[in-house]
Image: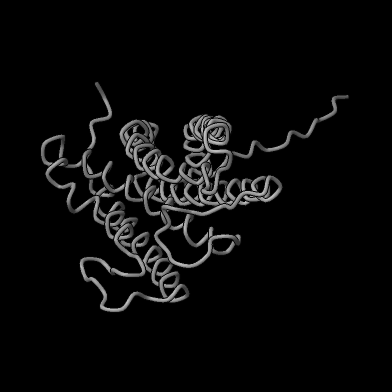
Length: 249
């Protein structure tokens, strides 16, 4: 007599999950390296400043915001340039790539904002223990930045918009080529430029007669970032879905 052995069916991840997994593997090492360098750099800079000035009254690790914005922007451009052709050559659709790249960009942008918030709060605890103040000198939004909510409202939208703007710039370069892609930068870079211009005293190109209060400025910043994220993602989708690609050498 023979006994039949039941075999479990092989479950394969959905194309979206597979694409997400691959893309997150691409961005994870750079994320770890960036924050490791940011933390070590902040510690060294704080020690040097304390030795020179006896105290440090501004956040040092918070300056990593500028680096994070441009790292995410460049990372998204590279993600489109490196992975889109591989994705299509593997038999997956542009629609899946648009969704997975958007989720990756937004997710990593949120992560950068949250990590920076945690680091600034921890830095504030250390400063308090040493009798130092902690001021965010390069903030776009008015008001104190000593709470998690205020820091998240400042940091998360900027990193997310930088990340999705990179997707749009990257897909435009793939669609238009080097020369026309560069000429199109004033349009494709517009979402990030628009967010950076949203502040208490200015909304886009319009300078306000009276600066907005802290609550109103924060609301404009967060809601504006949501709108710009949606616009940049939709434009990235429109460019990518009709993008002709050569998948063979």
